Image (cartoon, rainbow, N blue to C red; front, side, top):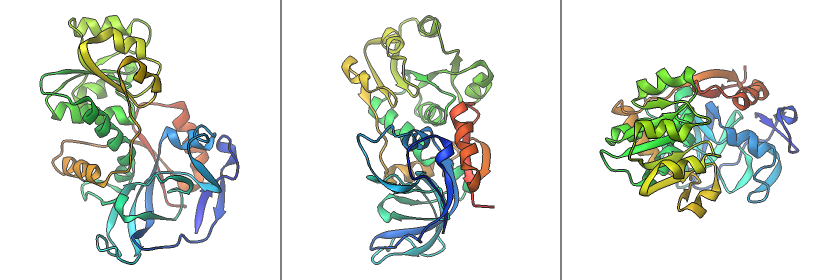
Length: 307
């Protein structure tokens, strides 16, 4: 099969189009023909070696954790799926090697879910990591109807899903983002505020008594978080492990089919929508990584099959 891979840590320049053996399909494994895969910042951070201290790696590495596709084959004792099923997954495993930026990927059935028919291939590929991260974070914050939540980086992929989940739960949402993204934040149901210097004052102007909870999806904002929290308020971060020292929760998303199925139900009920901003053929992964590094807040970047 064709795949994008790298054989040493580095930037986009280490990526090459490679011919690799087809993945083996063992018991309880699903072989997926990739229809779309999405780019997340963790993909190029992993490639740069940021997770070397906590994850084993086997070169060459095919990057990518998000995928949507069609079941090509199933291993023994895999009754959940049949050839031809449309599926999607957050396909992170314990070691770095066989990712989703390829023609095929083999994943344990336990982390694969049936794709919602309401989503395109690109939208389905864009949802797993961001959706599961948002859901796990909000579950950790244990939000109640009528409470006020501040989301740092509401215009990012995780933030956009979190806004929709929180609003569905009856929570008031204040979300940071650049001015060019404020209209989209309003459309999602959030009250936008400009990030940067003076953020705490701007949040307090909207919530003079403080906010009940804070979800940090960007990092480097712990002082602001603490400054705007009500006494006894809860906070969590996916980007700053030091929140633990200030009574917060550090979130690391897990593959979770039950939560993917929860997201699928919300998609079917039109509670959650997925924004896709750019699409690249698989062989242009370096360009897709570069675009993701530059950031835009305009939606997820996805990869389609090799042209």
